[in-house]
Amino acid sequence: MVHRFLTSTEAAEELNVSPNQIRSLLKNGELRAIQVGGRGLWRIGVNDLEDIAEAYRDTGQRIAAGELVEDVELDAK
Image 1 (cartoon, rainbow, N blue to C red):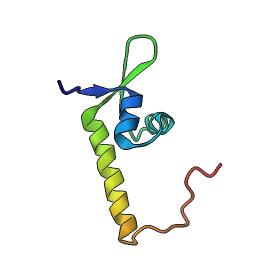
Image 2 (image 1 turned 180 degrees about the vertical axis):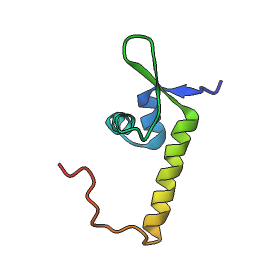
Image 3 (image 1 turned 120 degrees about the vertical axis):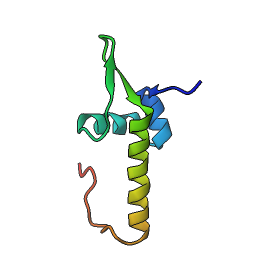
Image 4 (image 1 turned 45 degrees about the vertical axis):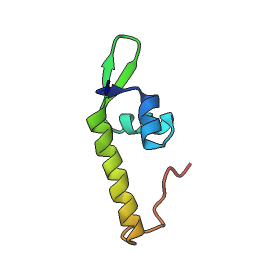
């Protein structure tokens, strides 16, 4: 059976990132999710996750092609 929705942990495994990164994507609106139940359980649509995975692939290709500069700060804390 193919699931239409994933937990944040499952989504993190699919994208090979941490669950904290998934929560960050959800917070800043880059990844959509729905809340189910009243206990703060969130589910991420497989189609939405595929959109993010495609964006990661595009970014990887742009880096490989030299289109992105390396001096961009990522999570500078």
